[in-house]
Image (cartoon, rainbow over all chains, first blue to last red; front, side, top):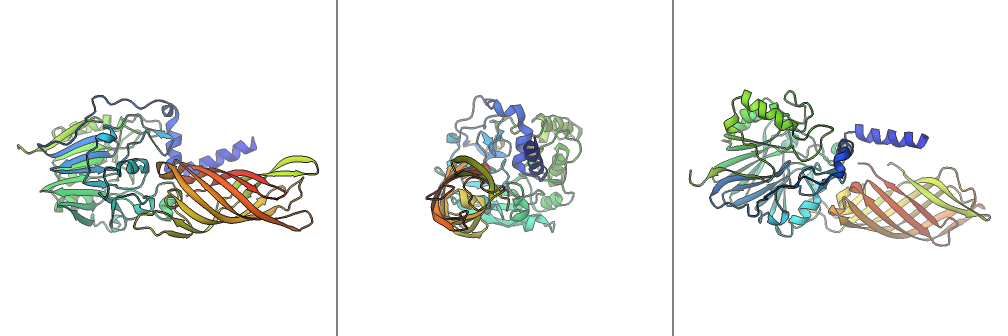
Length: 323
Length: 155
């Protein structure tokens, strides 16, 4: 009995320390034993010759973004679980073998739901020396795979509220690190030890098209407005979870649907695509709670025509060459 | 520096038993086989998990302490191992599963306070980002030859 008490106290202390892994374990429960929900009619060839801007939502924060002839993969997680214990509730929206040759891989931060070593290990076979961008600090979590790793400054976690960090241009495609408010690390304490500021958002800019990709972020009333002064954003992919009740803008490190709407409005973007929900269990919430809340909000805010809610595995063309 | 729990073989005076103790995983020097271009090959004292479990070789020093002492073999409760081990990833860049093989030198003291030392071999299996593992060690000619334990690191 005494040993059990010690084990319980140890587990509780791990959980309370903020460790992502232990929170994932604690939040899963029975869902761990179910196979992920099948995605029917998965797209086999996602390269759209007529599209100038298209997105295939693979799930959670993983998106395949096509900007003219460029293919960008964000926050690659295609594995059946994250952190071993947190199982995927829905299959990835595309077979890994059907992901085309990429022009860029972009990782916003090293949390287990945004970076899967198994996934990038698998993808490297088809994408040798492909540019792989990430914010400072993420290098501590990346093996020496055959990518062209590019570390980018994020203004030390955007503490000075300068919302644009580094930029790098790769074959005409320019990537900017852009404001996000989150935290780094991957395991728990490491976020305080060596990866505190390893997070960012991105802006992808190519042939006059700009896409904001938020990754994971909290809301800030100034930062996103400042971004809008510099960029004419065509599409903003913004996280809307995780949350249970989903009331209000969110917390310091995550936006809830209302915070995401505010980011979209501050960015003055033309289109809004929600992400970061629907795949991994968060505590005891329905994984689609953020979506239900968002569907109500977009009516209240009058932005229904600007919001594109994709199903996992669905591909949407935002700008077509014919228009 | 969370100590890892270990079980030690305790045979002597015709009796067989197991004793519980702890060991500390100290890594004075580690060499990563293929780090990314931003990380060096070498680490001193503190090895980031991705550098260790994606493939590395390290020198280790492992002080061991048996909480209740050895009842049967009468080996002194403080011991240490030192040597080299190699890590290999098995699944998900070693984050889900990796293993290690090692060899080195052990030092114990028997009931007469005489030094007993020699060669030891060990193997380990690690999971959950290298936070948890199980390890087995065999010490040639030692009074307490076998020990098995957990590997715990929290970061």
